Length: 158
Ligand SMILES: [Zn+2]
Image (cartoon, rainbow, N blue to C red; front, side):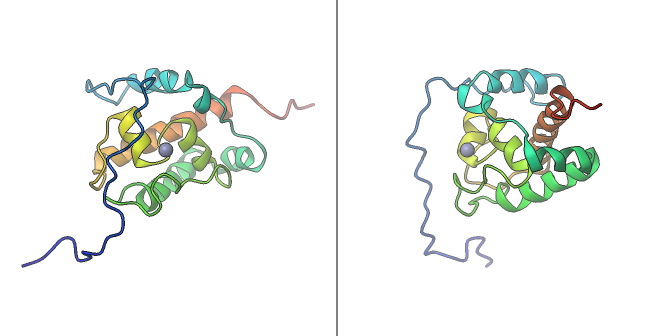
């Protein structure tokens, strides 16, 4: 008999999300991929807290220097470690506000923790993210970074 939960002393039972945000959108079950991505980003960006986040300083430089495929790999790696587990460590506080463009993008796109992921993207808590869900989250993050880098250059140039 193989028990998938070897640690019965888990200190964090799901608190079943005490914060209900009435301004959150209804999760759209009609497919998160494709052109819905920009629409969803636009909806999230209307939220004042999310709209505050932009790439600046070193994080912006990292995004510009890394290139899309490297960033994608970083995003995938960070998501796998910090967001994808059924019970991510420090869920709700696992995403710094700076230090990597992916972190900034996570706050801007509401992919920073499992509560935000559920509220804004309709992905349930309490289980590991599927392959498709990881790919979706990475898509959202990379799309946002792409738009940031393309949208507002910090260096006006000569
Ligand atoms: Zn969050």
